[in-house]
Length: 170
Ligand code: SF4
Ligand code: SF4
Image 1 (cartoon, rainbow, N blue to C red):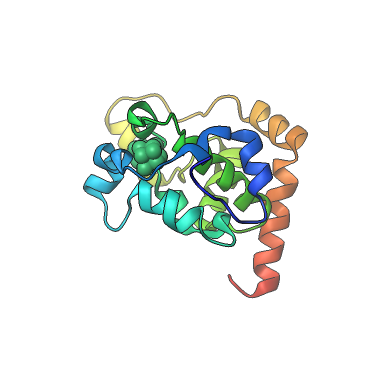
Image 2: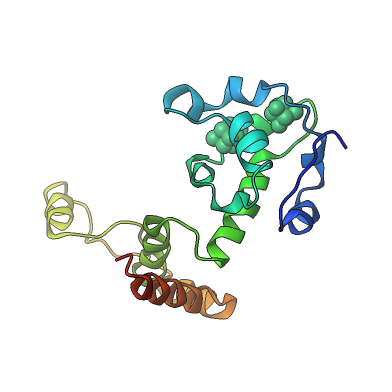
């Protein structure tokens, strides 16, 4: 073990991603990360090693949501640390605790309810017609709702929305 991790969900995270403690902070991940290259203020080494794993509650770190899950960092890591997997696990913890950004919750809700991550407006319909495309008709919405219901995701979304309204955040 090279990295010392101290926070509440430590065991929960290690259960899912055992290699994270092997990180020796070399920074190779930051050299290949496209979000670091084209974004601002994001660096997987800093976010992962310094901000996330050294904080008291890493799942509240909003930088987690900047990761594009491209897995480039994992391909080059000499220690086989799967950063996107770690971030994915932390995002799950964040979602369960109501720490996910409101736009992410809204996006998940939109996919469950309409089958798309964006609203289909009259302008979209007009443009499709002008391009001679068939009317927009997302498929599999029934299956998505069933999955959301059976996995508890639907209730989770309602719970988060109620909590936000109750907190006066919307
Ligand atoms: S490349 Fe791997 S070992 Fe190096 S800082 Fe990134 S996660 Fe840690
Ligand atoms: S998986 Fe995330 S942290 Fe890793 S290189 Fe891609 S965007 Fe960067």
